[in-house]
Image (cartoon, rainbow, N blue to C red; front, side, top):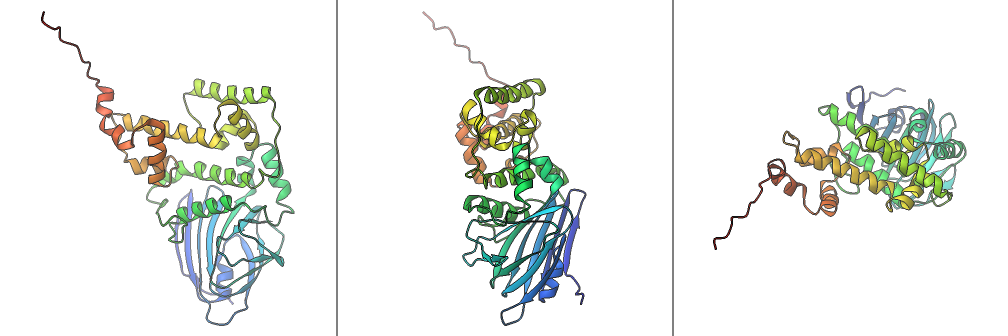
Length: 348
């Protein structure tokens, strides 16, 4: 039986957005794109659910709610990889195995699996195109995920990663269930922002995914490799005048995995790649704020450079530069037209 879908859809070449509300378990099963699935209801009462989803840069982000206990037969279509997780205390099962807090479920396309989900259940998910994964993952990171995705059912428990992914998905969806509150980040009225944020978002997803494996795989890097990586990056900046704004860019410039990059930065710069990238973004924002023709608000600049929380951005900015963004703007005129004080000779 086919049910009419109550969709509110907006699309552009870069952004596909859809939210649907359902009142039948079969309707819910049919709502999710890029899936073949069948739901059976196993607790009493009227069913209700919703599906909130967004596709951006080869990654399909979604949050699903169902109010009844369900047995779900699922299979991801096309050449994709699914990751699913929940922050709730009541836990799901995958293929009759308990999923612990902080664990991320993983299944490749073309392989059927079963989920048992409890009542009043929220689940977050990502469906990643393997071509996008190939683009974001470099070297050993790519090999690891390609190998793990064929047989890894759940990741090692990493609550930080699942929390940060849930926060990112909720921010993208503008969802009130966000761990940090609701915020409208992307829409089709801001196509330039969508275009600018897409690589920052997909790179952040890759950063978080690789962190699920850090504790299981140690990386050994020689002093020569560390120095070569640092040299490649500093020479790139000197030659182009551009600071890389994503970890993916750093990996591509130096041709190393994220794990190797992490070690090299800690050894060479004394900071993590994440902090280095954050400082580069803050420096770029500062240049814009000091520009005479700046027409952007502080909030817009923060969002455009991947700072999704204005309070966190302000804290990072003040910590690095010793002043707030507002104070930078207030003295921007003095920056371009300095007043040189000349001492008046003292009469004898």
